[in-house]
Length: 191
Length: 190
Image (cartoon, rainbow over all chains, first blue to last red; front, side):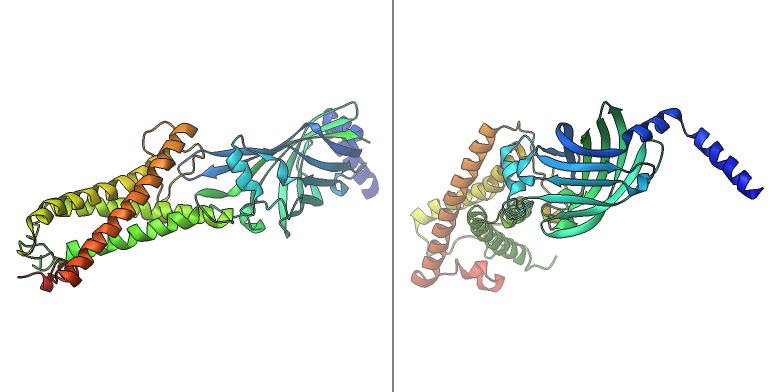
């Protein structure tokens, strides 16, 4: 009796899942490589007295693997090349690449490796992982929102806040906030 | 107010003396800091030192405004009677030039950070945000004020050297009280 009741609950739960999400999940499972075309990694740092400055990384690579049936076993890897940072102001770019911030010559890669993915809604997940920059590794969390899925292409809008002091990049605080706001669009191509 | 704080017709008071030496110390320190901070290899240390230079620059500006107000509202001690007619006429001009440089230097630095296209805020000693001067930012304006600040700094330090040499001449050659009365009020009375 209990078993049959449990089965009924399970079926009801499945029916309660919106059709779009069910379709999205079923279709989304697979491996994707992050393509620079259609992807962007923007960041904003607040400034004392208001405003802030924006930048973006032009070069990065990565992979997204969405587990069939168990989103929690999905994986995200992302490698960013800090040399490609751009803010629209050449002197600031040079400063960011220098030993003052990224030290791109000695630490040419910023890496993120997910350690867990927790579904938070039909189309969103909390991605926790290890972020490594300038030889320092720390745990960070990002929110990923499914933004589109069609013909072997998957698109996520990813946001998160990172404390730059954890990576030896606290130059200019408190003039410039310690919190770096990331706003990324990651487009993955199946295969 | 205790009498030794304010100036009298024959000697400087402690307020003038302290302001003079405090400003002298910061002014010379700022010159050295400015000289070093633009020649560093490490951009990180350079950035932090430039912010420190800005902090002391704003402190200097405040102290100089205070000093000018104090000077205007206080007696100016007469020069020792031994001083000749030429120096009696040129010394006030040299002092006026020193005041002008003390005011112009921090103001030109403030103008420089205000027009800079880097838009780095000013936060003296991380205490509060100092607004920019209402000047339009541009690379050209930044270049102009950077040069102005540079020339004023070198001319200012040359004037400080001249002023110091004159003070030493008074003390060691002329053996009058011009230097010592700027060290302690008790040396002023003649």
